[in-house]
Image 1 (spheres, rainbow, N blue to C red):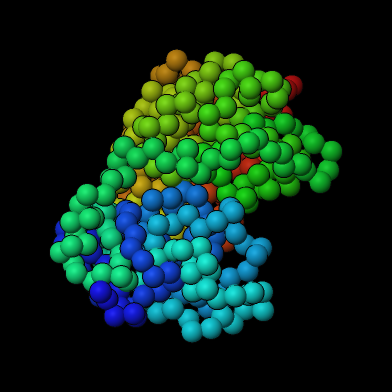
Image 2: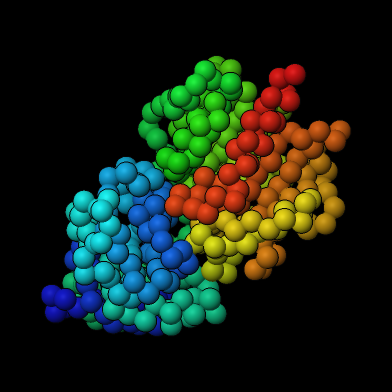
Length: 375
């Protein structure tokens, strides 16, 4: 058995780090990924898109602002585990009601601290994201490695069913509603329907298995496809629904996993990135305007599409609207019919809790698209 304060991290290639227990004592497995945000760890931990992942914080000290009851992006922590270098010994924010460590313990989230997260991140950048195990109950690396190798891969992982809402719910605007939106919950964050409601949208948040007839019964002005976890190629119901919505002529807006679903519905393909993009400091180029936005990301898959020109689909012409300036990854799609916009998507998070807010205008663009359809 391990020392009460000892913990171990083992990657699937056998790379091992030893540190101290952080959060709940136990054993956990998932995909090792790194998040580059200097702040916003509470929003990261409660983002359903991180289901099945052990998150490594690249910022050297984590926990300074503690934990509060206002910044959660869902009803629980979703990460499989948390890896930090230097946990703050006490919160220093006036908004904090408890420490990060206390919340990890309360929700049973196993973590490890006191390791060289810079070295671990550099290793993942070179070797790619991979399966990992963290244990504070048994620190035998060979035994933990065997369990890591027996754990499931993120490729082929169907995780949306774990995070979607079991029942529809409504987010109302403060003013008289201008539009009705059917939002498919693939792992939606609370900030997203709130951002739409702030723009006069009446948002029906729907389970991922919602049928086309159920969507149309709401008489929506547009359909929104949310962020979420797992391999997009497993989301067959959402892909089929998106195609039916496009056939019906409804405006579509997708973000993150929703961008990948949009691409698959149009006949494009997706692929697994080497280590993905996660953080709140990712530069993205708007191809049409040449402007660059600093954006919030959390994705390990991407859409494969030509960077130049357009592709003919049964629903119109699709072209790449945004590209990542770090690795030229596709960051957005634009669908047009006879020169008119029919739908669009981006790989990043315009709601961006806890920031940045360079891409907030995309919700306004969605409102404009719905208004133009109604004319």
